[in-house]
Length: 325
Ligand code: UDP
Image (cartoon, rainbow, N blue to C red; front, side, top):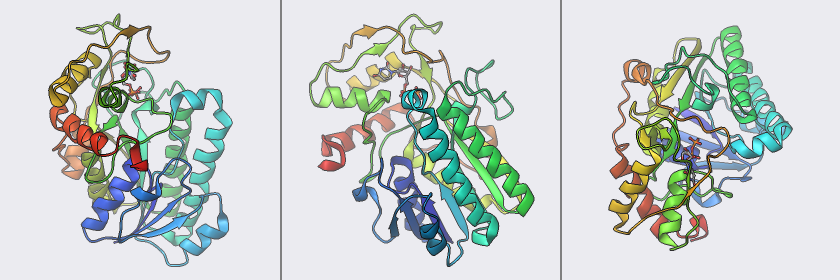
């Protein structure tokens, strides 16, 4: 297929673009490099540096229609979204509307969207199914839900197939691509970087949660498994309309379990201090992933935490300063 990947210089976008290219798809990428990295753009793809708000650029890119669009380009820092909500509404929702117009005007028949478990907010029940109430608790999650809604309405009205993939905790690294965010807020890269650089910068945020060891439980999913789900979703999405699918393993791991596995994988002693809870962190977020398994035939293959941390560790060791190395 001829596929446009927006945000294809980012962590999950570039990994997905590389997997699609390796599978023989013709891939074009659009990314404004606001958080992405030029070096993450896979060889053998066509790269357009620019923003989804640039209508002229989009007109030029869509001059030849695509079979599919995979849409990652968005801001994704929860804390920043609380401080600067309009930046998130303008960029995330505004960019998606401009893109959806091109798709609705005949630019593509399939649309796969990078969504998030943040659309659920604090769940009433775990594991979380796609039928759970959608009550995001921060502007980031709210913009992702608004993007899903716009896409669902446009898909229904104009007859393209839209799939929203709601990721749980993306982690790990694949081939030459890994996690390099500034600032870095996520557990695994913060932990591994502190081990690598022998800096005492890592702390456990709260050990008084109602979980067996008192630390928060999350569902970590390898970026390679996420990328594969996008490839499968592209192949599957043929009927007009909207479908949402959770992407997680269905198994949760506590912060303390991740720290213990990191100690095993790196062969280092790790005994981080405990700091107060980070505001807004739910105790337990785990996916029900039956729908993605059934509809796509998807199966996480590298997401056991040992493999996931080993892949991430290999990447951080090779790139101690991220893509600058
Ligand atoms: N966490 C932590 N120390 C850190 C970063 C994260 O203890 O330096 C915890 C965080 O409080 C949460 C879990 O690790 O319970 C996963 O956080 P992350 O930011 O990776 O993902 P989230 O689930 O918030 O999207």
